[in-house]
Image (cartoon, rainbow, N blue to C red):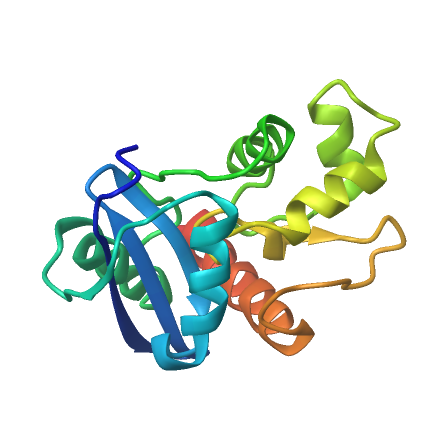
Length: 182
């Protein structure tokens, strides 16, 4: 990425509250719960951490911002179970591996444990490291960390809060069941 390029954003209303999309010309960089005004200081910290100097620019018409908002709204309408927006990941190699594993091994309407994700990466003993990487997932909903539960079947950790995680899982379970019946 050009470390001086612009970072475009917009906030939008979803059934679980306001979300903000942050993207550049290479893809989506972050999808977070909360309005961009609430997220501004965390975005500035994130930019510093990744040595990004680009300005934050409000642009609801930016192609990846707009595509992400559309795909997330289609998801909440029950019309989308996979996302196709390009992701521009900032994180360690291991974090990116974990996020890719979530995309492949945590399908819509199903849950996986941290242990399952670690095993899918051929690192069955890396459960804590996998949990740490999932905790840093910058792509709420699109990279489905909400589908990861404790090995005891209990809901644990989610950036949006356990109430949102529960609602997402219930929503997907309901729509997944309907889709399977068709």
